[in-house]
Amino acid sequence: MSPDLVFRDPYFLSFLGLSDTYSEKDLENAILAELQKFIIELGSDFAFLGRQKRITIDKTDYFIDLLFFHRRLRCLVAVDLKLGDFEASYKGQMELYLRYLEKYEQVEGENAPIGLILCTGKSEEHIELLQLNKSNIRVADYLTALPSKEILQRKLHKAIEIASAKLISPLPPSSAASSLHTG
Image (tube, rainbow, N blue to C red; front, side, top):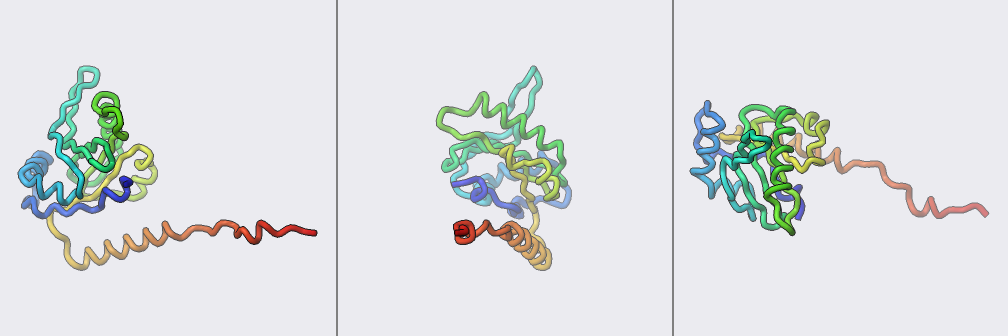
């Protein structure tokens, strides 16, 4: 089981019933009110551990929005809820959370914690340049209302293009060509 198979993008949170304008606290409250549906949307094997998990570093309090444990990955999963598009500064905040969890909360036999930043938009170039995959951080969009059929079709075509580009790579030298020798 790998994190790439566990985490999705985007997450559809239309069941939360949020209006056009809401705050991060409204989003969090709606998720907790519909926790079972939220966990189903996240995927199987997630166990809810808490909300607004307080961590104190150098006498400063920070709060992890939602904390889960994933049974098959055997790791803590910190979820940070954001309004609007992903910003580079979110990486530093999540790295702080993950290093704290690793140092003070992770128990023997568990894997390193994973961070999931849920936001309403992101730039693939930001994700690539910040090397979030090396930091054990995932970023995913969330939608509080189902998009139109046209938007879904565009997103599907874009996802297919991205997947195709990742599959196309230069072929390694053939073993037959490398085994030729001159006599």
